[in-house]
Image 1 (cartoon, rainbow, N blue to C red):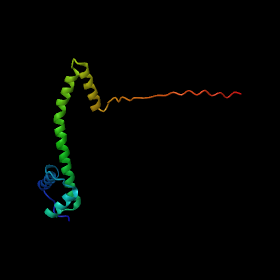
Image 2: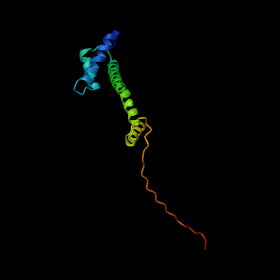
Image 3: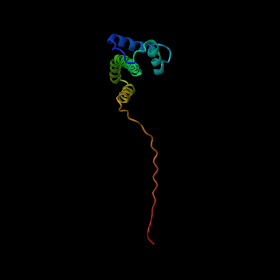
Image 4: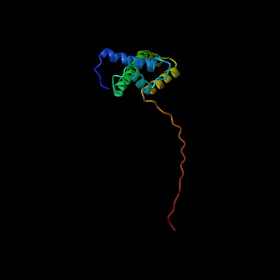
Length: 125
């Protein structure tokens, strides 16, 4: 169903429609439902192209959450630095543990139970 090439604004409108249906509505909107929606409302492109709009809507969602997270990182880092400077050693230690955890360098404590068995073997007569 290849038709004429859509303008960037028309593609953007379709991606935004997909975004709204997927992420702004209270319903669970599946890929299959999106394809059906496209056939019903547009019916001018291939399912591959409709899937491309689906993926672009996913990228918009990822970008939204990345920006939201980034806006919270700086205040969180400032708070961690503040906690590191605490006079209370327990608070400072917890801050260090959290920094290690968030940076992927968490030290894991492992309880180990060891048992040593000594076996004497004599090969003489």
